[in-house]
Image (cartoon, rainbow, N blue to C red):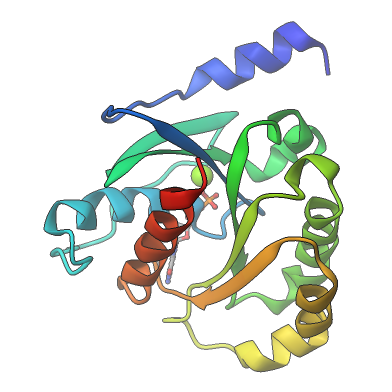
Length: 198
Ligand SMILES: Nc1nc2c(ncn2[C@@H]2O[C@H](COP(=O)(O)OP(=O)(O)O)[C@@H](O)[C@H]2O)c(=O)[nH]1
Ligand SMILES: [Mg+2]
């Protein structure tokens, strides 16, 4: 893709919510529809309460992300979360520079997407520019029923082996962006990761 087009896409949905001193860049990646935009909106909602237990209410409507969505959250220090639309997979690598942490989201209610997600994850973990990044793999939509457990999914993609062999420090978390389950863990991980890193 031509550079001008890439920059044009990046400007389409830029959203800066707040600012603060010092910042760290966090990439939020995953297939279309896994719940990335809702996660960012939820993190912004629970932040004011600091303990991650703010009143979430009904989930806000999300639209498919065109290009990239930049959101600053201030959790002790400013962390800029850059969501990249799933359809931008081929140019994700243009955004690896300066990335201190990586949130990789999987839809835990949709095991048919797993193999594609696994290929994407392997590509990310083997990228030289991301070798120093801390990685959080989010299994989202645990509020929905599924014929496969998360443990079965992890074993299907051989996640324990992946974690053992990867250069990165990898953590996993099970969440529901809709219900709010696990969001305080995500917030804590971001704070801990960016306290020392970025
Ligand atoms: N049931 C359920 N639905 C979710 C959850 N997270 C996101 N969704 C829904 O999944 C759809 C896609 O979400 P969106 O955030 O736009 O996905 P994105 O393409 O990854 O940014 C929306 O209808 C969300 O309300 C969740 O944890 N549980
Ligand atoms: Mg989105």
